[in-house]
Length: 606
Image 1 (cartoon, rainbow, N blue to C red):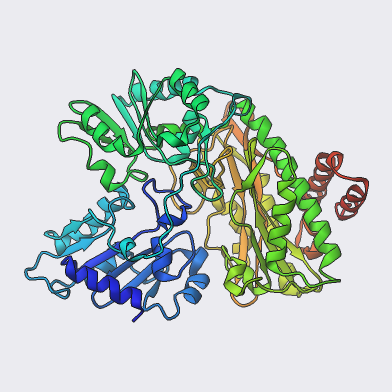
Image 2: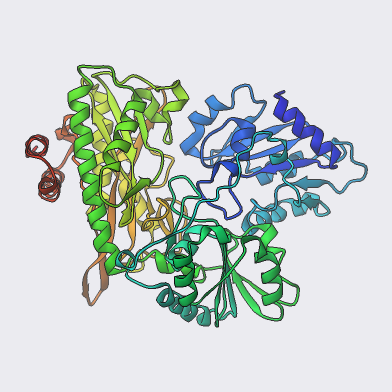
């Protein structure tokens, strides 16, 4: 048993707990979290962004999804924690497992009710309600203790909470003032209807207030809460985070600025005898407990009630024009990176971390560049079979890149004028027939989705199979979704829409951005992903309805050396060649003469 596991079980016994749960999030249910909130990572050694741990007196398990199976298997070695592969046949959910394994009295408890602990700041209302529902049949008298961060309190050298200042996101980028956005939010509140609208989601707050921050790595947000009323909007943020000019602008746009921690008392006061709308998936158990009994609580149950997410998911014309520019800049980064790789790897030692550093160097030279939108994935050979691989998993510099096989690079940038995310798999030299076949099947899936025309009202669930079909036809699949939304100088993953096998009620509409990233991942051999970003557009209207399609707005060469042309139709070959014509046309004006000649060579007709 690891010392951490032993120490936590001792604390569980002191607090009369039969089980303890450690989720992955923060107080705002963010996907990526600041170092302070990485208790699950500290406790288990598993560094993936998604996962949840359950500990009882006799067992411990970590649940994570298919993106992280291989990584988690490695990183949990010696921890005393078992891996549960989510959504695999025969694998219970953590709630089902807990219902079967909650043993009363094993922690020194008298009685038969059972007691489960967790940090109430990091458990969402949605997750808590689902847990209670699963437990009620066998453990209807179970109680919950969530007033203390028992696991986190064992972390002796825990990093502090970040205290970076917030920044203005200028109107020339946003296209709308905060006052205009508040007006749109209140119009939707009246439709619900509700008196108050509470949100803890940091990207929602940043979008509405036209502010950005540095409190979460790679996601430009600031820790804050928001309570919108019809006469004002209460923004809960620490005073030192707001420069005087920014505070003045916010107040003039209709915000009342209050201290971050005062959200609990303010909600308790302002919601008395009123209706209040909240989002169960992004609201913590601790925050929801502040709503008084006299309030009418409205848990958002349909996408339109997640008001800000629905509004910001559809980009306005100003945002779209800037996003196009951001992807051209990112395309320039890719051309310079690929040229450097082709010229450097055959002649000198290049490791995965060297490529990461080169990406950061190139992106940092561009106008309006802020940061990466996530830690770049640079995965050589069999490492690419781990969908969210980090070179740090293989020593200080990662794996050396040889002039053979495949290299997968997934990278994106945060710019004041947009957020980017593009993946390419690159032939570093000699390839096997299997590699070429798999690469080409992934390419066919990417092209199939990009070229799709669909009826208005279709969701990403309806379209997911289109990208998978060329891969399914060869009896293969990938565990991840096919696509996700992207923020505007915000989170690289953004709702409310997705393209995935998982059911979605959110129809794709013009102005939405979505990634297109099918893949094939084979443990111990290789991983292949080709990712572009799509903009939803209306194509035509007729007696059958409105039909939509996609415009690919990311521009980066596709490595034709890895393509098996015999597997492509003539239409697919034409599409590939036309895409490369656009890549050259968009990027060449921003390159040096030497770079243009190199790009012209690798984008020549195939």
